[in-house]
Amino acid sequence: MSRKVDCVGVIAFLDHKIDTTTHLYGTFLDQITLLLTSENKSKANFLHFDNHVDLPDISNYTGCHYTGTVELSDKKRGSYSIMGKENMEVERGGDIGCCGYILWFFSILLVIMFFPFSLCMAIKVVTEYERAVIFRLGRVTGGAKGPGLFFLYPCIDEMKKVDLRTVAFDVPPQEILSKDSVTVAVDAVVYFRIFDPIMSVCNVDDAFRSAQLLAATTLRNVLGTKNMAELLSDRDHIASSMQQLLDDATDPWGIKVERVEIKDVRLPIQLQRAMAAEAEATREARAKVVAAEGEQKASRALKEAADVIMESPAAMQLRYLQTLNMVVAAEGEQKASRALKEAADVIMESPAAMQLRYLQTLNMVAAEKNSTIIFPLPIDMMAAFMKK
Image (cartoon, rainbow, N blue to C red):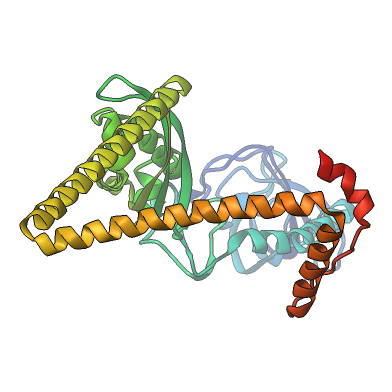
């Protein structure tokens, strides 16, 4: 005989996994234990199931509380069998305990503490002169982003910033052997910018470092084909050639070379001295040539003047009178000098005459409108110097 019992059941334990895909057919003796209580709440014994158990997904309800009406068969071999169920309600039951509450509290606390940091790591800002290249699981998502605010998915997104402004770097001095076998040290400065952020990140490891190394090698290659005179006089053409070569080589890297300047060409000390001596000799030779050319021009002019004078007797007579005038003037200057010497001798013989001449000179100086100050000295103090 079977009987129906309104009961409250608790699945106490489940020893091992049960195949729920077959509606739990099979023998589960000593595998599932159900504690039943009747309507008057009197405790019944533990029931062990060994036949058909029609409880949906019973493997998910170990330790759960449920109520309902079940039909039990007669007792067999000290066990009971559940034959069916009606209006079965299954609900979670039991208490999580003190440890559960503590773990729940600390979990919430950790979420509150680390949420701002996670938010800061996930939100990125790119300025006006920058662009962002975002990798999601190793792949570039879209094109370059920016400027503005971006949200990154934690753990799967990686962002790299690229500066689009023009950058200048110095090429270190390069020891170069010129075409005419002269060792020189040349340095330069290169201006470049990135025009394609994705190419500069994906096609080259370090765009800035790679551009520096390429500029140094290009400088050596270009200057090695020039001689010393071209290095010193044709810097603009060398810089233009170097810019073109660098621009073509860095185009796959997303780099645009805007300008190249040759800063300095350093020569060896011995070569500098030799060039200075050569320049000095060149200047002296040039000066002699100029002097010779001047003498030649003067001689030619004198010859032309002589030819003109010879052709005109009047011009010859005029030139003769000019020369005679110059001779007379020279003789007059000589006579004046001789008269001045005689006057000085006379004055030296008479101190009174010297004093009078001295006073006349003072009078003439005082008559002029100037700021000259004269301190007269006694004549006897000057006598000793005058005798010498």
